[in-house]
Image 1: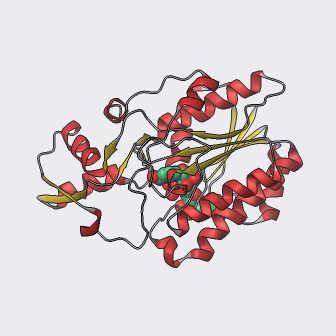
Image 2 (image 1 turned 135 degrees about the horizontal axis):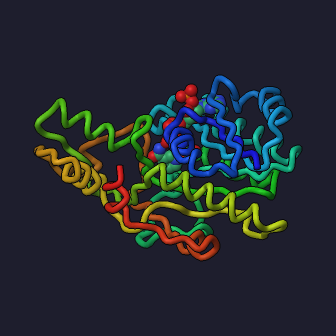
Length: 283
Ligand SMILES: NC(=O)c1ccc[n+]([C@@H]2O[C@H](COP(=O)([O-])OP(=O)(O)OC[C@H]3O[C@@H](n4cnc5c(N)ncnc54)[C@H](OP(=O)(O)O)[C@@H]3O)[C@@H](O)[C@H]2O)c1
């Protein structure tokens, strides 16, 4: 079984590379943005022709949430045109496409966890391009799994956890917003879930499981709670101050609440998901 991974040098891409040796039955092909530029249809066709993947995990994305506000064209090229190219070549090769989307497709006005059928309403360019990417897949190629996730962190790449650890080495006091509520997701756990979906799907000649799924850990917290736990686990003593979002203005507006309901993925794939705090301790 051949599984092609795009964006292999990102956090999720590196997490997939990290777990790949545990799955000798899968022939992983890891492509970074130089080997496979998803915005280039010819490049996509050439790589799919060469490897003929059974599954493609799209870990490539434009993820700079604030920068996206002033780089719409770049964000659109990667998160919409690039995803459209992958959907088209996946259809041509009968490749099942696993694509990652985000809690930022929602506006955060709910007060209980978002389910897959809730109506998206992104508040910024990044969320809008990610939603448009979901839609192009749905229009082009039915054999897809779209996994919406949130607050991704890992030992790889850039993320909130690494920013907090860096800031703690530079400052005595750190202020973090405490009025945005969501759930962290360990990228390695997300990588494991993607492989589980592939292995489950591969056992079934036909499946009606395609569609959108939520995945994050269990529980919820604010960014302040997340930071507090990061410092606690790493035995870092620091003056951590909770602040409101209004005291930390950013170019992109973020959802105030984006906890995802995981009932669907748990029941269809028979998963047990651990709490975000337990998963953080494994890093
Ligand atoms: N990070 C989060 O908190 C978060 C939250 C919710 C959902 N997600 C979603 O989760 C997925 C994985 O995110 P991540 O945190 O792993 O992202 P990441 O670390 O920013 O990695 C994205 C990767 O995409 C690659 N890329 C960019 N343009 C490309 C192109 N044209 N062709 C091929 N590759 C390209 C980048 O390569 P270069 O570095 O070489 O440009 C980078 O390696 C994304 O779909 C993201 O939207 C992330």
